[in-house]
Image: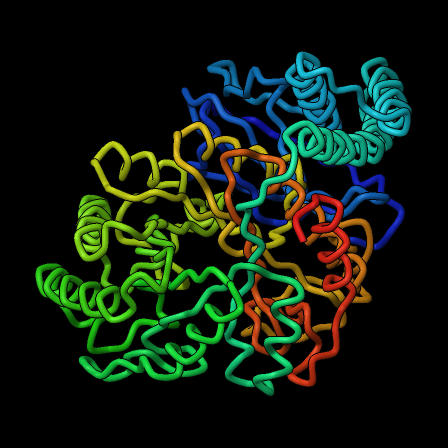
Length: 507
């Protein structure tokens, strides 16, 4: 048997859970691939003969959070042996990977003249000291020292990235054209005057949704009957207030928003519909909408029509070509979700079983660029998905290497308890480990907003950051709005964003 076992030592003090039963493997490029993974009392067992890989596990680091954390053998990756079973101490592998990655980032940053804070240096020194003790130990004692190292290194890694982002902002100067945005569906539920008062004090960029179904006002529940009037009124009011507007999406094939009449179309019929639809929608608004999201979540995830990989690339390129021809003046965006591609291990299109091999969002984006798809902007969703900020920055920089500008098209986090999507049942989160620093509250939500908006503003290849959603209870995440209700009560994130924009000199 050619097998690798990662043995966890549960040295945490709390009741747990401390290890999630979902584990990912990544190849040498960082892309998730499906793997035969078993988790039992002996540990995490992986049998992938001949493949070099890293792993990502959701592990509880008391003093930081219950998050997905990578282990990559200090960049050398893991590989099964023909000689049988190899066993690793999971705690130690996680700790040494975190230290290794911090050192890599420090080497990258030193040529910029950046000097990290004393607070970072102290946390990093303590983390390294504990790792040295782990190096000289074995078994559970090694795990204890590794766990202590992780607590300090996780905090240090986050400090390092945020300090570097603020350093870059100061060095690069004010970005007058940067877009701070949010969705506008709250408009249809709130008093109009109150909505615009709240929205315009925060944002200079707005998203108007055109979901065929599943929207507050469905755009095309019945084929051929489009609901423009309410959206156009909102658009005109935003333009009066000097708000730049993005329209979305021209194509999204998730089950939440795909009516039966569209789901039943063949590939050729889809193309015919899409050509007419795109021309009609873009033509209706003319130059008033400055950016159009052409496709959303097409990377082998939202696929109610069960398109194969080549068809997905083809329809994306086709949609971009039609949109470009409809109005060459507007910018075109391709939006991706699931940046860490968990669906590849799950083999799922949303909630349905996938029928074709799946790609990560990065691979999909690279494929459509190589196929000649004509678009301007890569959209990335930065919801809190139990990942650390350093890993979030990592996937953004990987997108940035593709040579296109980006929008952080959807950013979100809860403001209460733990992360739940709108369709999930509530549960007693007080019995669960906290996900990031502590259980979610309005100040912690403001921290996530501040950190993600700061990261976006610090990267020259990112042109916009867009919070999703505006008002509770109409968000994708439960308690994810920055307005508590349609009565307009502000959460902490509102004041935090104003202060942040003022600190940038962009308010």
